[in-house]
Image 1 (cartoon, helix red, strand yellow):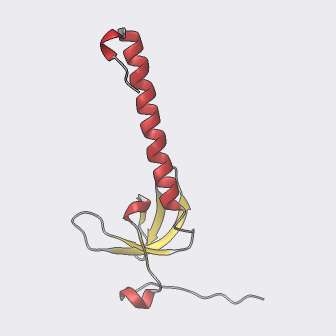
Image 2 (cartoon, rainbow, N blue to C red):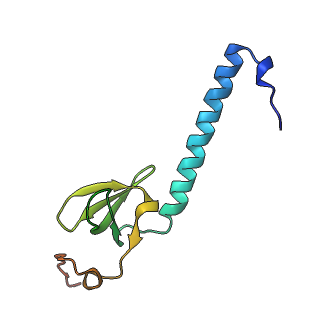
Image 3 (cartoon, rainbow, N blue to C red):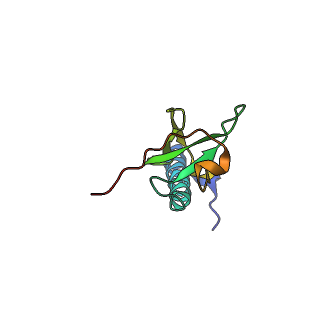
Length: 105
């Protein structure tokens, strides 16, 4: 599909630009959503912010393009799902997670 933009009016170019931007945003959201399907709330994950050591935490919420992770130190981070890696258990990464196991009655 070829569009000769030289023949479009300024109004048509603005409309085309708005439609392109909307489509790109939609594709980006779909990509993030599909990556989020690899994770569940409660999953233990790790990620590394730029210039900082790796952080470990638990996914607590899905957002539009990110997930909220509460780190072992109690910080809340909104992280793109493409930056997360699953962690099997706290013993595997050497962290100092504080987990309280509750009995079912």
